[in-house]
Length: 203
Image 1: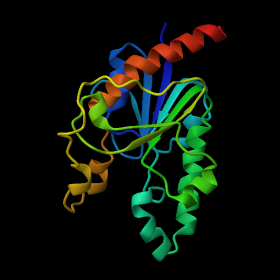
Image 2 (image 1 turned 180 degrees about the vertical axis):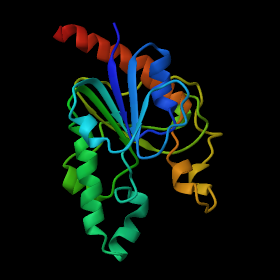
Image 3 (image 1 turned 90 degrees about the horizontal axis):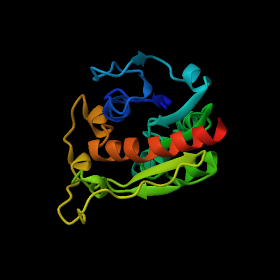
């Protein structure tokens, strides 16, 4: 049995390709062109796709105006309209028309949490899944998905903070948002089985 899966706000194909290789019916969508050679991609607005029916939606919405790491600038610049727009888009991803949903973001500041109305269901570090980096990553879940179980023996002692040390460049924001292959593999291995089980229960 296969799953019909949407990956919202993914251009790299890192996560989508992991599910494609497992034999699922996958579509990625982002305003950027895809880097994947194997997964179908729509370049443009994901909102219409979020209204279609899916077995699983995994989303990586932009975090610029939601992340706690940048809250100082949101306050100093009074970017409340941008914060609200970011939080509303995040909520649209979380409320996607799917049986199971997982939304990934960094730690949110309190203003975003107030609009969204809930915090993450679990957090992880990439080194827990073999990507020897340190970047706290949060997930909001719907539909019965469980937190990912660590798949690596790494203990974090050698993990690097590569993302936060990137020098300024035209591609800095794009590169900072690039996802972790080890975590992507864990998502494909664990959540695909869970979503298939839940789909079988509904059929």
